Image 1 (tube, each protein chain N blue to C red):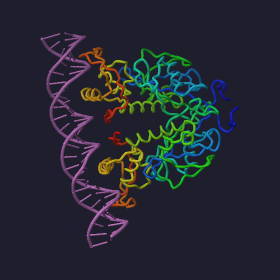
Image 2 (cartoon, chains in turn blue, purple, brown, cyan):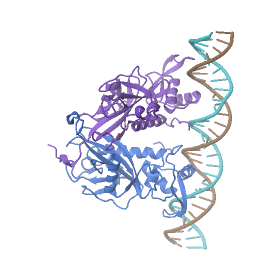
Image 3 (cartoon, protein in one colour):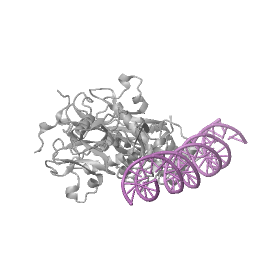
Image 4 (cartoon, helix red, strand yellow):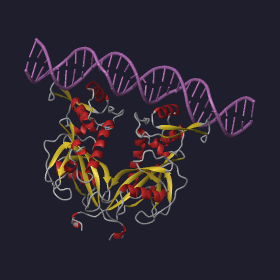
Length: 250
Length: 250
DNA sequence: ATCATAGTCGTCTGCCTGACGATAAACACT
DNA sequence: AGTGTTTATCGTCAGGCAGACGACTATGAT
């Protein structure tokens, strides 16, 4: 049936792993699930799973994301989709070191998901439990044995965090961390959490409100952050920021 | 031997495909090989092949690149490696639509290679022949039936070209298209070919010579372009350009 | 000698950013 | 009611960088 000689190429298992990021309490957090089986039993790992036979890679990633978090992924081809009800999802990179899984040859297509703050993590699939934790928890674990992520997931997470950090510079992706309606201050706190820096509120306000297509005022105001009521905005249609938002040195 | 139930996941074939770009005669060119077998027999396709059992993805890509072009890939971890004798190689994206290969389920990890102008294409492996052609030849084929690339390779090429176009904005990657020693004018013609625009020679000269670590003068001069002799440079250690080189609008 | 070609140095203007002062509008106290 | 705190928003100013473009230099070709 297949014109290929099955012995002409080695069979691989293909999985998708997810770097799911959100901003909670002023810090950039990643979703991790506890492994229920060997290897790395009991260790934290990125959510993920096998790609099914009839499934595209993006479809598999969206399915895993929905299973783990209940989030509906935005199709990148649907730019006008409102943030808040769903998450941004994009392919990150593919990891295929022959020894990355001790059991067999597994190639993992990692994806990056950015989501607004969610009420509570929800364990799903074969994971015993799931949690959000600041990315430093996994990238600089105090106890290497128990704190570090399984497999090469620390590297994948680091790559995902770096992608997110650089991509909010030149795109409007930071709005993916915000609910549908948000204030300039909330958006600024997203940048501050992702970059781990403090930004000048006045210059930030000037920059984001002065960039055409970035923010669309909804007319409403809110005072949920305390202080003077702030204007509410939705994400505008623009996806690329030109000139970019500058990340402070050091 | 494997703790996995082989029926628990579908087997995939994993390949690497290469987008190899160079600048020839003022235009951005890609390497294509003619397919010797069905499907798409006789059509042009990107070079590539199966990942071997004990091979990392980057290793497989470097091996295919060497087989097709004789180029030695720079390890990204070796920043000081001189351009000219080798090529820049990086992972691009992974393509896994269930129907992308009519024969079976194939997931392809595409890589992007940037090389200086090479003497002549060299057919290798199972390809009947190989050639360099301007990327527009494949992206906007006059005759869809014969000019278009096989499989989803037109999409992969488009993604690779877009990656190259955006990456030379904020990195010193354009030097990967140049021989070891080059002039400011030659580097400018690389930008002009990749972006398809004309740049002001005076402003370009000011920008690249004023960016610390971008260019290192070798002391020599050349007149191979005609006109007044130009200073020769090597690529400096800097990889990231800050502020970036600005791509003109429209 | 003159021209064409390419490289290199300057100047000027406008835009953007970083630093930071000032004002406005809410809430929490007393 | 007044005072302090917090957050939002508007303005000002100086420095840096990019685009536009003039001027000069050093080769080879005619």
